[in-house]
Image (cartoon, rainbow, N blue to C red; front, side):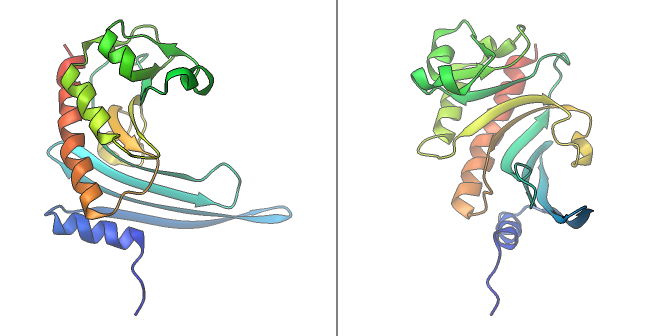
Length: 201
């Protein structure tokens, strides 16, 4: 009997949770002088009350081109120049890990989160303690950790999100086990809805 892949298990578990996942798989080979380049891309997404669960994985034989992440995303109405990524704080390590760090000017946020972005105008100071706590709860004992992102056209492969600014909470791994899915979907939805209501005034 053939063993199920993590891709198949994810689709099965999402279906068992009463969701209707859509899938996409492509395999491409690029002939480059002197070598062959293989690219495999697969993703699963499902709409959940105007939010989107997305699991994405691409593998390439070319160095530094593979990418894997899973998250909950939604569109958000913020100015184009407002883009950032938010991580749990690593104390002194942040000095070496991240450039373009920004302060929210709210002690509870700045004590627990690291904000990275080019724009000096960030509405992150409007985040509530409840939203920060939800984000910290998602990250409890998780390695790699989750990150919050606000980005332009971040998921162009998902038609409803193409060319839109999105807010999302994601982890750089393929989440497919049912307890992990339930935690991400439940807490991720709450967090994204909170953020949308707090940042968009």
